[in-house]
Amino acid sequence: MEMSMVVAGDLTIPAGVTEFRVPIEFSDKMKTEGLAIFQTMMFNKGSAYDLWWTGQEFKDMRIEACQQMLEVDPKIIDSFKAENFDLAIGHFHDLCPLAIAEKVDVKKVVWITHGTSVYDFTAVQIGLRTFPSFVPHPLSSYGDQMAFIDRLINVIWHLSTLDFV
Image 1 (cartoon, rainbow, N blue to C red):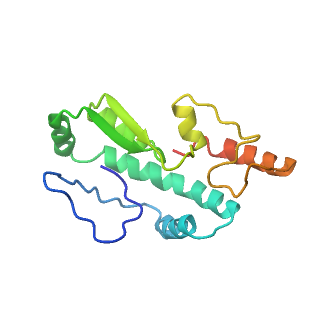
Image 2: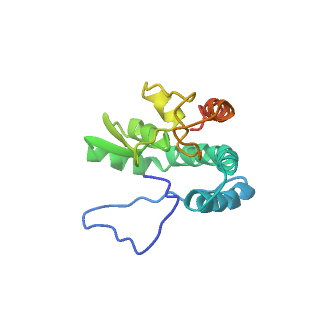
């Protein structure tokens, strides 16, 4: 189960794989439109502030989507439990896969990432320290050379995204 943000091309489900899709209905239709803007900015050029602001709006949608996925028909949850999975794989961009794995009694979870980036809110969940005074946020445009104001902005960004579930 996952909230698929972007699907491109003709994807086919491999033989022997059952797909469960949970239709998500967001209470705020304006945020649904904002998701399209967020996706565009993620894959095109957007300013660091635009990404930060849109991400703050997006977190409410992710929480709402996760709640709906966790409240799915109990028969689906029971079917997952009956499979007795040994391992769940989730993307570190969202905490919901961890909650779903817990709900279906999967004991081992692999939390994958793309590249070497780790968001602050996920680092906190797995006990890693981030160093925002000199390590740029993965979505920022900062590099390894930051002026004092850049470092300050980076720390503020860090503090504002700790609850980004």
